[in-house]
Length: 275
Image (tube, rainbow, N blue to C red; front, top):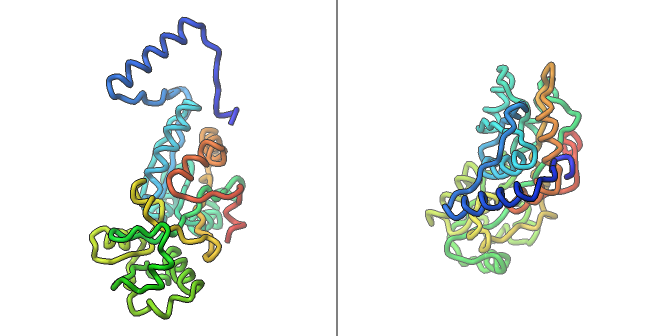
């Protein structure tokens, strides 16, 4: 972390002045924004929509510690890939999977060197009417529900995780007639929140902190890892700020923020090795 925390000793008078400013700011109910060093080029990041709330937390921490500004463009993985292929001005691509970053690497539009899996999606079972954090297996075995939402497992990793889990605990045959397939984990969550579904398998990171307390995390050993990859975009001169950001993603501070946001993390791993 030392390369991200560039600190200088301050005179005692300046130290107390800064403390007074911070106290006054919080007394007014305002949060002091990170100080940007305008002499350093910002890092421009194309990031998947679903990761944006966490990305903004990371950016605030990153800028606070480095002075480097972060500029985001969000969209679906495929939308962002298309923008890169069309010459969009980005330094880093952060996807919700590893396949889209790898596709850019194969097309020569992104660099394999330094590519990493910065987070792992966590599948969870959630209900608005049942507190499943301790009782999910019993709930599934009991059959005390009419509808169970699952993202279509044909092309959705959370759906595949759900089916793998149901089969792993030998309950799939008993609940198959209650399964309602949705287009994706976001639709499943929306229908559960609207009580159109009794329960559903969703992305743990998409829940509020309060809702996380009542969701059941699917044991990750029963399904394939849901890796999310980040790569440097190929440019004639790669922005040094982008390289620092990629290093930051593997720092203790970034990993802590990512975990607290509801994602899993493992040791540093390249995008290509996770396929």
